[in-house]
Figure 1: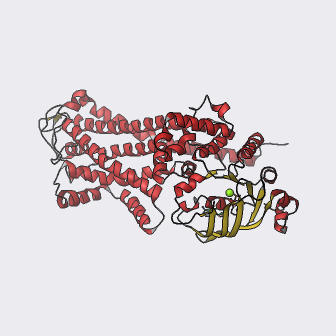
Figure 2: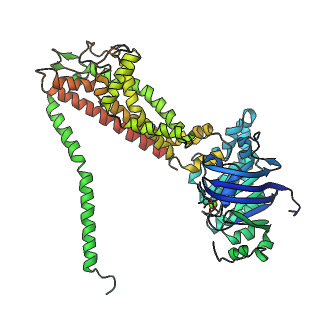
Figure 3: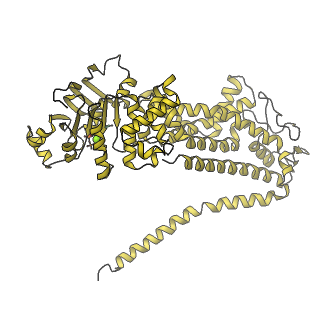
Length: 258
Length: 295
Ligand SMILES: Nc1ncnc2c1ncn2[C@@H]1O[C@H](COP(=O)(O)OP(=O)(O)OP(=O)(O)O)[C@@H](O)[C@H]1O
Ligand SMILES: [Mg+2]
């Protein structure tokens, strides 16, 4: 990927309060399109909160207030003419614990299409096609093509997590947000998800929260370090780890707190 | 010596044993009254227990005969009252649990539900009398009695439904929101399918409550006696009064001199049997639906 990529997600002076508690303080970042950007920082610094701003899921809590600007693909997502439904189709999210729905593998993958689609999209043939495409893209097709009727919650965790990624793809998202997607997985599973991320890179903008420094180093092009609700540093991953520009970043990546 | 049992440890072990047996005893003692009640009732009711008792009408000024009119009346009341309270209760619970934000208005609704659930049935009876019999001019009728029972069961159905909805993992909802599902789509696709067993159980448990209460129907639509054909399934009109099992039991035990002794007991056995049957159905249904979903 070239370093001159367009910004995909831009925030300016983003502040967020949970009731009286300020969880994000003047956060301004430019996340580049098609790259993998990792989000690191000690527990409670607001990584998840920032991630959840990008598909406006935070608002489901009545007591959250947000100020500032978030632009995704050039569009201010707080504009009144923005449809939350369309926004969430374009900005998919993957969670710490895989959360497949307790229905079949097949139905999990086409779930989004059933929610949004009408007419031709819902013909059996096009659903079948969508399932094959999505599962192939995440590398599950060969393992699961004979078990599409199996209940998704009975799969191995790694397969569940891949399925959760596959579930986003039929909606043609532009951004995939991942909140510690590997923390429930073993070493093998972690490697598999990272490989999958490399496969998806370029076509999707990927933002991944991780507590694992080695993973941030291995798997991301750029890295954002956050502390106590503030963005401390955002640079190319190699630069951030080799020559951190801020002493607090250096302390964190050397493991002095976290 | 390593790992030796010291007197101190032995004392703790003894306490542990005592505690276990005390707790077990308390739990097990619940069985005793149930067995005693059932045993006593069945024994006294024995001479009257037969299929005929179910389908016969009362005879000789209710001193003998069966309970058919009361049985049918109870079925009318229960079915009608739940036909009102179940849909209203479930929809209200869905609103409170899935839509309502935490503001003063919804807090008032919550408070109302909790307090309504604690209102004694005799108060519901008076309310039913004022609201349905007089104000709404339904008169003493099956409609008034059913609506009174509906008001009585409603808050409990709301509470049990909310509990069932709240037991659906948050992650399922998040999975839906994150593919852009609306709240209603989320409810339809994951919340209701995964909470239906709890919702149904809560409703069924109210069947036995509606069947068992006397006060709410006594003031609003149940009568001591009504002439009904043996085995007639549709003896009542909705704007008329009806007999009911709980009321019948009260009548036989206190209002009619010279009743054959086993008749009220047989009525009690029937009422209790019906309650146990309904509750067992609820438990089996819940078990069946749970085994099917399993996440
Ligand atoms: N729903 C909420 N209500 C109130 N406070 C919250 C809520 N979610 C998070 N917080 C608070 O906001 C701060 C940031 O939380 P957040 O979950 O974003 O941190 P994080 O960086 O993702 O942490 P972790 O690494 O542990 O996941 C924390 O202090 C947390 O206690
Ligand atoms: Mg987090």
